Image (tube, rainbow, N blue to C red; front, side, top):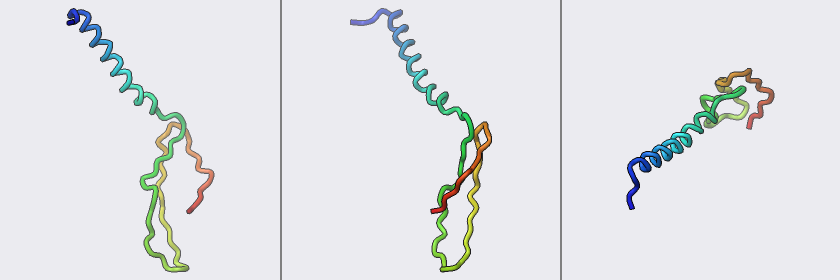
Length: 77
């Protein structure tokens, strides 16, 4: 049984509206509210280190949020 043309257009329109709303929702949900810490690199491998050798590495921390980012605790592993 074939649908009349007007009914087919209505059904296609409803399906399109549902698909558009499903794909638009994640973009809306990902809005940044508050601070958002972003690290350019999360891990750094020092390779082999001799005992007693002083080593250091600087991790760049960026705030891509819309409020002040406060780092209160850092725990090295």
